[in-house]
Length: 391
Image (cartoon, rainbow, N blue to C red; front, side):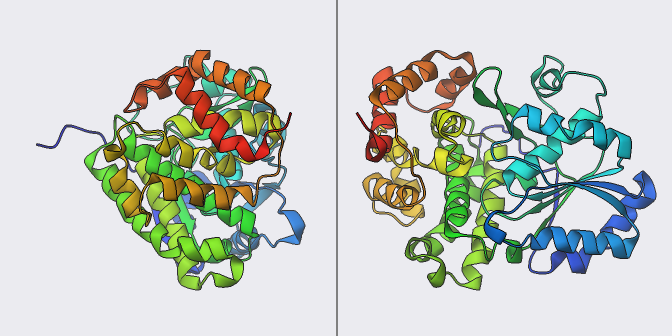
């Protein structure tokens, strides 16, 4: 018998190369109802990399007669203050449509800015995390239509309602409530091609974390596990090319990376993440490691730490590994080539104590299928970070 479960899909997705060009008329339908002023939220691409998505979005808006303003100052792991800095100018522009272009930081910031514009004069922390936030909706809380154009293949933010923001006031990251879904997302694998290897690593591994954590979450259900399993098969097909580097990746690999990200976004939106995502927050906050790498860095040792390996063995095989030990070795190989930090034993001890005691992490213990002790958390931290420990 299949247990009762909820599965929520709010976003219309157009997937494929040149999908914006093929489906751009969809904007006319929204303009006719809401208006023709768009707020575009993105970030500056590093190393001279081309923001093809932004170029195509602005070209399309010029053709359709849609006025727009561009905010390109989104920071990595965006703090609440970063999103709030766009508020005054956005309010003066009075947009009718919200557009997110970029990786998860840009898409999440677009969601958050949309929510801010609905609450003029209200403190941003109150808007994002206050007691008035709806805890269980069946439709998006965004009143302004949002359109997402992901340029990385990891966060799944194009199909989820959440936004993860850095809270400098409490020195951690926290998810804005999970009900700010994009109306339409355009997922074009061309937007990811040309990205440096570390961005592909962080995207692929972040997406894998979403699917794997959502599959062992105590609220995992028939549909979200089925979607994740499909994505694991896609991952198994391109993981060795990713390990080899950019020259080994094919156009099919880029297509499959984007589809895996999208699919695992749907999977985790309907169950959520568990322990590795929570363990990652100190690395993002104190060491400036980007979100995807920081959470996936703990993924291998988390699954190797399961006392009952029968709970995770099928997942490892679906991903193309013999067992959790082979998987953990792969995780370290990929993440260690991108993460360059130092940590101390004292920091690991402090982060372990924080994880065990901070109220914002307690739900993660309840979501985990096995009871975890302080020794377990310390072991995962220590083994995952052993390459970076200094005296």
